[in-house]
Image 1 (spheres, rainbow, N blue to C red):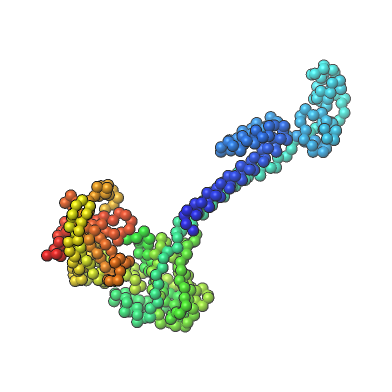
Image 2 (image 1 turned 135 degrees about the vertical axis):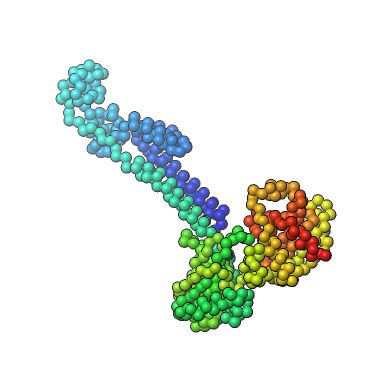
Length: 438
């Protein structure tokens, strides 16, 4: 569910809650004010229209001056001035025998006609104050509904933080295919030792996991090499990802084949590291996952060549094409020639220099002067980790831009998709590129 849809649903829930509270208060105030002989319509408008329950609070304070009484005999609404109930005639309070003015039992003289009172009036049955059960329910609703909204907001935030389901790349390989496609002999040896040490139960799955924090992408990557002793050689399987309050999940649904001769190579791209959920023959099985510090899959992970000695490099780009650009005017350039590099030593030298360029954070002046930046001239460096001649641009290709500004060599590293992708290059780097054309 998109953020826009979630926000719209939450807004509708809030509006519905506010409307519910307003209706409850309005109905209560109208009925209560009418019983007390107050202006019901006016007080209802005040209670509902005033913000932050101010009108309702004012009404609760004022209504105390208007008694809410009922006849103890029939329950009809009465006031303090009533001597008898107008419905059943029950004697509610004493009255002057001369003028019928309501009096108190301990008065000696009627304050209206000055007639003496001897206290001999008939037995009275004073009115009762109504028990207001509805007010308590209204107050509970006013408290509970906002609390529920807060909890709803927290749950929504947690779900949002859990992140959207990630993307998955997947392939099944026989052991022989894995050895052929795995470029690192060190990794091949480590995987062989791992397989040799497994119990190999038919109701288990085993996995190696390598987590790669997102440097060149917004999202992180997790690489899984999965071994299911009874699930190799699949002809009908499914793989997917999901997200919930409890985190991300990577689901692998396999048929029971009894084949133990293959591995599953999986690359997961997402905000959170997923938990493996494997089903074999319609039944969920336990997956024993081991976290390792190397990429066990056949998916390439691009190293930082500036931090990797030449002898430890397991693979290099297949080709780097350097295009020389000649400035034809402010903001415009023309192609002045191109050189394709495939020599491994030169490839390493170029990649080590590129990765060694000083990353500029957002405080760097280069970002402040972007509006007036002229990047015409210089070079375009096209890095092809894999050569795919049929594509002008593909996922294993990066186009980097090199230019000079105020005597400083800059490189825009478009592999980095965060936005802060400027590198300040060593002063010899420009000369290294120039030397390729000599």
